[in-house]
Length: 369
Image (cartoon, rainbow, N blue to C red):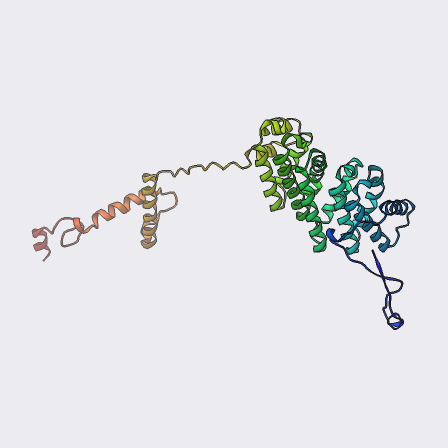
């Protein structure tokens, strides 16, 4: 409970000294929360404060959720449907407090109510505010202690899925709530990861321990649609979790899901619950992509030769200006001229005189002299 802290007169006279009563509070771990000496009286006091609006100060709200923690852990039989219908809403509201000690204690309170009185809590129809609180507490900018508490709560609640069909029904409801688009595809990647990781843990517990009795058949449409969102969300952790869940469901016999997984996906696509792309992603999930062989075309030798000649023409024309083609002159004529010129200037076809033909005629040589 909250303890009052006394401030001396000298401290009260200092500038900036706090006014009013000061309280020292701690958030106790579950194993240090003891039972109530008179649980019925404590419960009556909680109900009276909740109904009369006598919970205006933060320390009163802290004591309220602390009393509920004691009742949930040690006297959960008193938390009936009617009782939880009155206390869950204010407890969830205090879990969103900006005062971290109150938010932490309220989060632990909600967590323990679900663990020890889950079926009754589900019967109130108040699981949606609880899911919202758990996701809000998982946001990036929340204090680390709040995020850790939310993560531990989600892990323990998911583990209830393998306990018995009654608790599995509670977990299945959370699976359906947390696979909503506002959590999975929202801007907060930490929230998406927390939501889909919870679904992974819950489905593993339900399928592994209860099979068809786990109740997944009642939410198959929303489950498949939510996993499709998870495969395309921004969070890498959420994508990985969604992929593992899909692979797990693909391997389940038809009795567990009521039909083969492939038929369920096609049925959702026909109903408009999935797009064609989402259905394809679900069906191909876990399959190794087929490597396509790259066909390298054979080189076209004729084209390469022509290209080589063209390059030679351009190079020769740049060195010998008289070979540059005039406008309108086809390139092939220049190629022919170069080839002819190369033939007459070749050393193998020239005589020793190098005049471009045969050796000198002796008579012409003597006449010239």
